[in-house]
Amino acid sequence: MSSDQLVAWVGRYILPHERQLRIWLRAAFPTVDVDDVVQETYCRISRLDGFAHIDDPRRYFFRAARNVVLEQIRRERVVSIDAASGLAELDSAPDLSHSPEEIVAERHMLARIERLIDALPDRARQIFRLRKIDGMAQRDIAMRLHIPETVVENDVARGLKRILDQLSEEEKAELPIRRRQSRTARAIRRGLGGGR
Amino acid sequence: MIDDIACRWAAAIDRGLHGDEDARLAAWLEEDERHRGALLRARAALGLLDRARALSGLSEDEGFEDAGRAHRDRRHWRRWGGGAMAAALVAGLSLGFWPDRGERIDTRIGEIRRMPLADRSVALVNSGTTLRVAFTPAERHIDVSKGEAWFQVAHNPKRPFVVASGPYRVQAVGTAFDVRREGEAARVVVTKGVVKIWSVDSTAPPRRVAAGEWAVLHPGRMAVRAMQPQASDQQLAWREGRIVLDDMTLGQAVAEFNRYNNDQLEVAPPLAGRRVVGWFRIYDVDGFAAASAAMVGGRVERRQVPGKGDVTRIIPQ
Image (cartoon, rainbow over all chains, first blue to last red; front, side, top):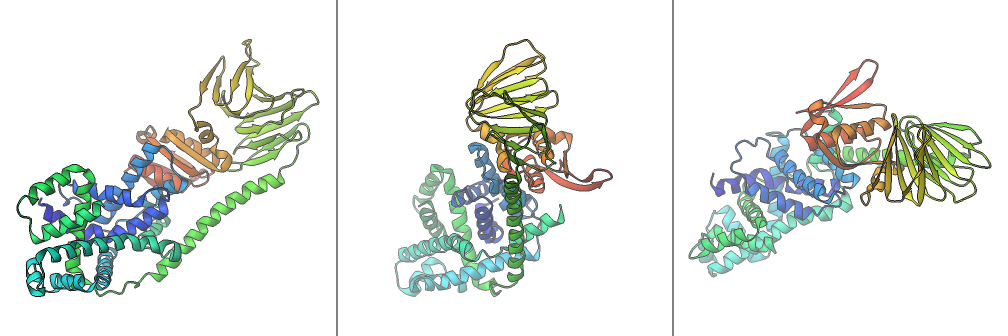
């Protein structure tokens, strides 16, 4: 499997659930370092030999993160009550493969990225637009905008960083204020009620 | 920081690596395992950026409000559950009375009662326990014939405080300790001070057991061991309505839960020996079942058993 395929798979099926994962982690395991767990989870995914066997990427993603937490718990030997209940919730999560929720999660993610791009500084926003809408390579964008290629590359890197940061920051900002239900949690509750 | 560099590499890969960049990228990836994950995430996000416009169009909030309500309700309910338990403990405290001589206390399954005693000692009586208080001017005598209780003993050297559990006797002066009856055996955990332990069935002299130690009593023998730091808090977590599983087998953990709950848990034999960890609320059987099933790679099955009510089983996947 080429790494490009993995990148595309992660972009399409894993990343859209990162926000929900973070919300879940923060709610279920208040004592863990969410950034750390997410990072470690991606690290594990990067070691995957293939993904054809994963038919529910969201569930896989949550489980992988859960395992990271579990290992931390085992190492530290001290778990909060909430940590334990978090383990419970995940296991009750129903399969969501190919469900409307899966598709909505991705669209939702794309809509958010769209807004984040809109919020970038002018030049960076223009660069991302050209990349995206016109499918232009960095070199062509540089020529079109009459700027050095390194500037384009820098803006891509910085814009990307900013968007990634906001993807994880949004959920931090959101939790204490609105505590809005994530789709995940709802599905999980439903699963609990169903007594799987 | 890692993310900064990962994003720069993602941008570089996007324009095409050249020169010695391949080698430098490989070196960076070798440096720290986490770099691979960070790069994967950054590249995946960059890929998504390209698709954002094409596929977006759904309003962010669609379909979210109902879900929010359901979630809040559930949370509320959960908080209520916890509150109800706290209230039960507090009620136990305020309803606690000073038993007269010969007073007998039976706690139901799931009931934990805090009882101030006439001498200003305190007994915290665990679920499913039968305990008799018999205070005389010469001795403060308490009999734990079944179950478990923790005692915080008011200091009075002239009037020994003796807990009997079967043939075993635990005497304290000013101290705190826990006595738990387990079939023919008993377990004593000393949390403060020193106790003397002996058995009326044996001629062996009493043994002193100090805070930080615990004793396991069987007919004819007694073993005293040092507690691991924090272990006494864990073993006595029931006083706060919690169960702490510290690398216990699932079978043992299930037995612990069954002490507190009428809805009984069972575990399939192949899973009974697996280890579990975690802190749980005593009454959260469902939470425990689901979490422990997840830990051992099993699943939860519920069914009605005539005569037994709802039985929850943890079974292999």
